[in-house]
Length: 286
Image (cartoon, rainbow, N blue to C red; front, side, top):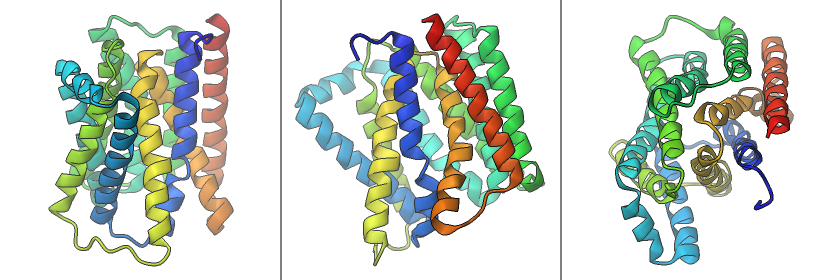
């Protein structure tokens, strides 16, 4: 990695993170755990997994890193915790399509916040990529969009805004390691979910599916996505996460034979092609 440019490092980290995330929707479908129990385990298992890993690598310096993260760490703990909760509650109160289209706004919000607070004005290629991928996301979910609860839609927007603020915060603290802050954020998510959990019991396949999902689709990606914005602009990191919109449904299709719609295939192809071209041009420039 030392021989890589910042653009190469950031793009690789974001891409690997989203590849680990893509089976997430499949695991959620395969599990029989209720929503808040799932939120609890998606908080507590990554918390202990990453905490143990950080303590092995950094030992007691982990706590120094947490304290030295300062106000950046506090902001990231807050936004990281909020987005983990608002995403679930949004889906509970509006359609999944409405929530995902709101989240597709994250790259655009990241670009705006980055321009305002970091003075990092995205180039024309990035603005075009953001616009094209957002239109493609709307196209994918157009038939599913409906007038849902304004409360759920607002929480979906807050999720996108939280992702943008979190990525811009990491970008503004390039020299600080905010992974410890993310670890604390996961603990807060688990504590919050405890107020709503009906049962903590895992049975049969859930004993395998839930821990695997929490480590592979949550713990590993959140470490990578907390590091990636240190190397590339926040909006570029969030662009990569739109890949989950198309790759996730294909995992579901392959395993449980739930075929994606033609709109998902067409819009997804546009998203993949756009991000591939944008990344190629950025990497070529670097």
